[in-house]
Length: 349
Image (tube, rainbow, N blue to C red):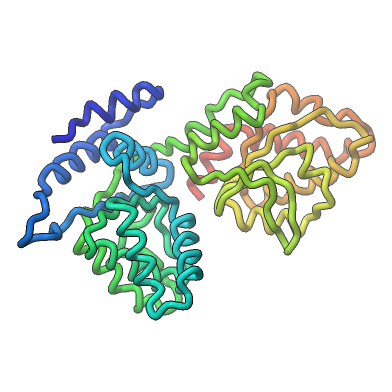
């Protein structure tokens, strides 16, 4: 029988302490998992051995599934939902000349993985809705266990989506074939980690430190991409994902970007992280103009931002004269954006 102490001890070595709701989930999962009977000739598939964990943003769903995976299921497949769909689409392309390419994709996945973890499960596209429904049901019927985390109850998946009626069969399948658990609680641990990050030391704002922090906070969501596309143009970045953008102040705002690009960024990304700040004067006036415009738009659109720099740098970030009439407002907004209260208010809206 699995022992919760294994997970708790493993997390404690990483400085992570779980709250009561998270521990309750682990206890119920272990009870659920331990009740599963080995497959036999007469019963090759358990009635329910899949897991669907849902709850508010930042409650540690990714952390919990990752902890379960590391301690008990070392030979599983672990994917962010976007990554999983990309894998499926790529394999569909590879098998495009076959009679039933989706069946071949499922067979390939079932052959490689007995357990598949899918993080941040959220349907946004009608094509993905149809594909993922068939994949989940087929994999489950072939004996591959599916472990899912999501912000939504199954009944709320693809809510108000185009032709959603076609997806209701998948919702029924999840409700009937998954152990569904609502992770309660209100504290957003991801927000807490971000707001409490100490950026008062230069070494904590290096690319290496920021990358480690983002990977720890967002798990596999942040990539090593060095560019992203906005308005059909490539811009430099230090990492990105579907919802996260990490850029260098020095590099990004040195490029010819404009307000239309900034509006698209805040529309697309949930979080924007910025480091590599440096003191500027009127020799950097174009860079400062772009940064001021970005801050105005981000503030207006209530964008979630995190800056990695010595807080004292704000007072000296711009030492020129030509933009002082604009910089006064920007400096005030920078102070406000860096407060915990600012981000907490965005979470409530």
